[in-house]
Image (tube, rainbow, N blue to C red; front, side, top):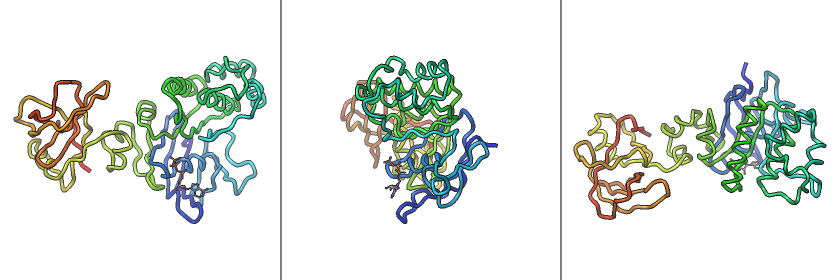
Length: 327
Ligand SMILES: Nc1ncnc2c1ncn2[C@@H]1O[C@H](COP(=O)(O)OP(=O)(O)OP(=O)(O)O)[C@@H](O)[C@H]1O
């Protein structure tokens, strides 16, 4: 039995297909991240799992019970699932401890532990209009978690947060899983938020699930350029560069093109097993330099920690067979 089973979900809004035949399962304590471009259906999928959107086909089952949609039930959803919207609201001009006390179903000890985990204990005496965005979000989360759900659905929890608040929230989400035994699914379009956290990543494109895989799979072996672009910079080599590298490495491109991340291309001294090129430009990005190199009929981006490359330098570009991926 799966913890969560999403089977053949279709959703239509205003006569338009928003989700098309989405199926996947989630095990307890498995971190799932959902990503995709704006309008691809991420929020609609999370709301459907929470029972807030009625699917036109398919069903969501949680711990083997059907999650009921808004058409079938006055209070839709499932008591074990809670959803934090991007646009959550806190009651105005109440103290945080009042907001939390009204929602709380835990013992005093349990509530204290939850507030510590959510890093909101020091905010309890404050009024809700005296909080930063990150603090408001952690309070909204503590309020939802005080009803003891088993699955927490977070819609873009990191958007609009600065790095410091983001880091605190990441620790909170990790501790919620480890100390409260709550499984989490979240939406983010930032690979920095998803790659290091998720056990599995779901990629949505125009309402379709185009790839489900581990962070390594979606990053290294994306099904298409759309998916590659969601996880950072990449090079899709021209047919000529693909053929030249394939000949050097003894590979068969089979009509496809090489897709390679900029950090997997190497600038090497030996031109034997490499393609020749000329440096077009270099840029400084803090922990690395990005060098643009003109190959025979292609410009590629290469990441290096070496700072000495300059426009006009003649260079050699190499690629290991294990870093080659054809799309
Ligand atoms: N209630 C609705 N009525 C009409 N269209 C809707 C409704 N809800 C969603 N849509 C449409 O469905 C598509 C998917 O929306 P959704 O909010 O799920 O995307 P998203 O991937 O979460 O986008 P974003 O990253 O911008 O939040 C969009 O084209 C949106 O305009």
